[in-house]
Image (cartoon, rainbow, N blue to C red; front, side):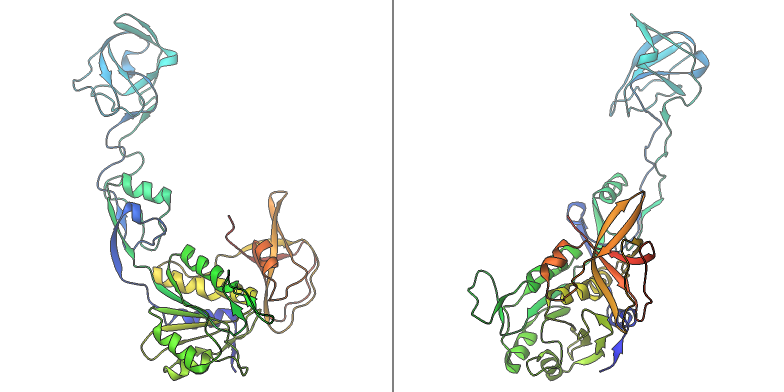
Length: 396
C-alpha cells in the first residue's frame, strides 16, 4: 500500500471536497456557522457624536465659566435645539451630542447651582465619541470564511443585520464496525469492549459544525458493512474500525463494492497508518479511521476536522503553535508521530511534555492530553528546551 505523508494525505482529501451551498439564517442561528458572504455596515457607528460619560455638553469656547442649563440629552432621547453661547445641556453616557456643542465636562468636574453649572476649561472633543468612531457605513466588518462567535454576532447586529448567509452544515454519517464493540449500557461479552470511539467522534464533529448521524455497530460481515454504507445519508461517511487489511477488516472491500475510487490508501503516521479516503460511485466521500480510539482521535484531528472545515467554507489547515520541550526525546522512526501531550504555561512561554505511554488503545491518556506533539518522519533526537510543533486540542 502506498504511504502518504500527513500533509499530502490531507491535501488529497481536501481536493475532493467543496464548501456546502449558502443558506440564510437569523443571527441567533448563526453561532458556530461560517459566513458565506461579507458583512458590511449599513450606517456609521455610532451614527452621531456621543458622550463617553455622564456630565454636561458644552461649547469648548465657553469654558471655563458658569453656563445656563437649557435641557437634557439621554440615550435615545436627544436635545433637539441648537446650543448657543453660554449654554450647557445635561448629557448621559451614549447620548447624542447636541448641535452647537463640541465637548463635554464630566459631572465630577462640574458644580451645579440651580439653573446654572460651573465648568472648568476643556478642549474641543473632550470625552466625545465621534460619529463613525467604531466603523463607517459600507465598511466590511466580517469577511466570508469567518466563523460566527458571540462577539462577531454582536458586530453583525451593530451593522444592522438580522440575517446572514452561512454555509450549510455538512452531514456526517458515523459507522463503527467490529464484533468486539458493544454500545453502553449494553453488557459486553467476555471478549468484547465498550464503543468509546464513536461517541467521542460524534461529539467532536458536532462541535466542529457538522450534523451527525450514528449507525449501530456493524458486525464483521461483508454484506452487513455494504448495507450500512448504502444506508448512510450524508456527504461524508466516517467509519471507525475495519480500515486495515486483515481478515476481519471489511470496510475497504465493502466500499469497493459500492464503486470506491481510492484517493488515499494509507498514511505514514503514528498512530493511524490504516487511515484511508475515497469517493464512492454516487459521490459520497468516505473516510476510514482505525478502530483504536487514540488512533481514531488523532486522525480525526488531522483529517476529519479539516474536511468539516472545508465543507463549512472555513480554513482547513490545523492551527499549530510552537512550544519548548519539557524533556528529552529520542530520534523518531520513519513514521510521523503525533504524540499525546500536556501543555504548561511558564515564564511567559509554553512548554510541552509528551506522555510516556503512547499506546493507541489508551483512552485515558487522550482524555488527559490537551495537545498533540508533532515529530516528523526521521526527526533527530531533541533535548529539553528545544522548540517543537504542537497542535493544541480543544478542552473545556
